Length: 79
Picture 1: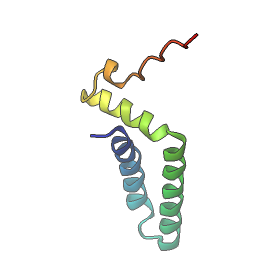
Picture 2: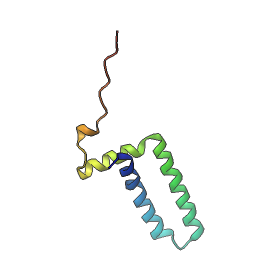
Picture 3: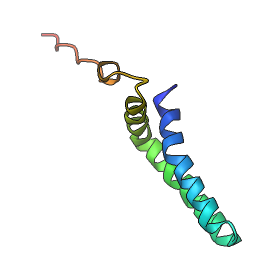
Picture 4: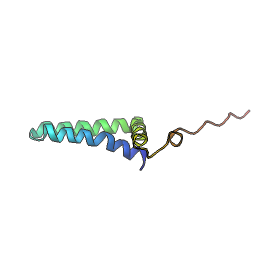
């Protein structure tokens, strides 16, 4: 699974469940909450935080090792 998809699931499912359980009967408030969640997840996606969260979530379940998720080393500058 891609780290971005894992991040979306790790962030989105708890937020959606929270909204469904607590705000479902208050129609306008629920839809405003849902719009704010989409806006927040969109912001986190553009800043790259979703991929970081997804990588951590995949590490927690053991789907990815520490070395595989580390960024590649920078090449030495040419002289």
